[in-house]
Length: 203
Length: 213
Image (cartoon, rainbow over all chains, first blue to last red; front, side, top):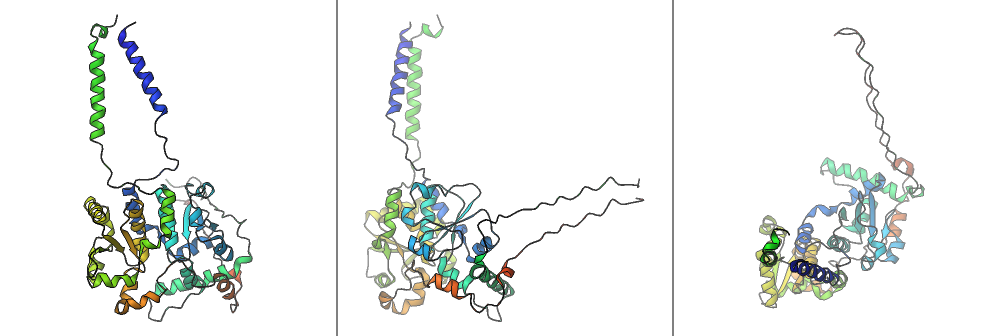
């Protein structure tokens, strides 16, 4: 046996033992601070109350509302189908299961938007995507959807369109609650165009 | 016998070259500009730290240049900054915050024990950057409650805002459950009409052209 081979074997064994003492990786994966700051300064995460209302009414199956207020406040009132995860318990394993599901859009809501935004930053640090913050929070929700104000006469036409929508949405959220929204699933009917028969006649 | 066994030094040479490469790699590793100082749990508790906030009435000291240890950073874009800003503030738009020079500057300010106050149009705009800098260990960074909007509405009498609560976020302004059920009254329409159904009707294709070209 050559001396070199023995030397190499010992070296390899030594390195292999060394890997056992390697620093254990952290449980939660995190993104780099620079990347997080870059994500934070993008204003694309904010959605309006109108947008959220539209998604609820259309029963968007990808929508997942997360209410970050306290449990007491949540039990008093929340949006339909919202899940309650108070900011303090955001890092528990059961709440983390709600994040990172491909194809879902998570919308954070709170009384105002600060707490919701903070929850967004914390979750973003863990590297989750597809998360949004409802601008203005529930206070704004009450002001716009539940108690819409008619725009003045000189307002542009689009404002009247939003007002019309809000009036309809108000009915949905205050009156149509008896309807069972949980069991209903959105069905997408795809009607295929019938193939035309081969051209008859002609050249 | 293999050919390389004729020269026992070869193994040693190969090994040392390998070692040198690894050492070079370590030295040329790019140092990240920032590192997390707080872990996830600590980042959550820092949110409830009232000392991390800057109150509107505290602004008077800065405006009158009575405080040497406070720097105001306006993180809105240059155009909005030009239209109006808090006196003695400096404009570093949110997109420039990521610059290495600015982060170095923050680091220097931290070493000099100078408080940095971030503000945007509202508190929300500065909330994210403030959280990040706190998590990255900049304990000197604070966020202005109410933002520029609240300041511009109350700039004549900032001292009076001490007793004002309206800029503090996070409290419900209504009794939600009450309003949501109350507003039901007075509407005669039935609820079912509120739902919109979208029926997509596709145009039927006409049958193949009969006869002639």
